[in-house]
Length: 368
Ligand code: T4K
Image (cartoon, rainbow, N blue to C red; front, side, top):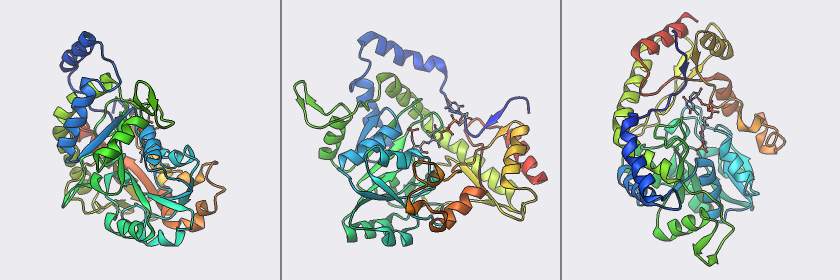
């Protein structure tokens, strides 16, 4: 292959279609602070995602940090080590101690059966991740949270558009947080959002993302600047027009990988976790010991041939220096997450990936 094949490539609508949006911004000179595109995108995303309230953010990480502030979470929060480091960093930014529990080896999401044993008098919340857009066991998590009076904040960075049989996966928990980063299914270059259940909570989030301002003279909390700009919101409006098409392409790629990789010894495709509507945001495979070469050797081989697969999520969050001294970070406490981190490889998946490129990738994997 002549051109490199990355793990993902952002979808961009035709440039000329963005010009009218820019002309509007240039015309009214409202660049940020909840302007018309910001308002339009909040409304459009509520409609598209089937949720009641959404607050847009400059990125998913600031949205996570603000979600914890919104619910005044303190003390200890139970979370997963098998995620992007922003999940637990958002806890440290709030002076909260992450307590890591292991994952379910099938879904690679936090294992609800392990949560109860990690609860202490300091525990105030659970922060699970819908990893790769595969829904967590939301019912089991809710039961534990209700029993122990804990808040639940879902890191739903990967879960744009995912639905269970009753509707959006984002309606679960007290809050859900999305990322609209360039590498995500739906992107606004940089961006993110908090989904919340009621108007009062949305108002608190809106204050917190705007320095805590309620009006010109009143500041009610030590808020941050987390506002999405008009440029990003306008781009979001345009991207929404193409999202169904993009999801359809991803579905076809997912199906093609599953078909072609079937029967390749030592290669396991991660199962879908029973979602009614999936978003195919990642295509993780697990490289078992009976594959002819190691996961890292395969990663390097693909790279040498211009295929930039990624080992999401290796190293585990708990292997980074700011976490590894914590007792819950010990590998003995996290055997399933450790195993997955050493086996996983996320293959390229994005709307414009060609079938010929996919065949090329699969052929390289088949060769071993
Ligand atoms: N929670 C979870 C569970 C998350 O996965 C993330 C982000 C967050 C929270 C935080 O949300 P944000 O604050 O980011 O909104 C990427 C992303 O930077 C990050 O957003 C994402 N998760 C994470 C899983 O992946 P990198 O360092 O692997 O990205 P990078 O720059 O190596 O990009 C991967 C490939 O994508 C490149 O090889 C080429 C392609 N690419 C990337 C960019 C940025 C492009 O073609 N164009 C681009 O502009 O972290």
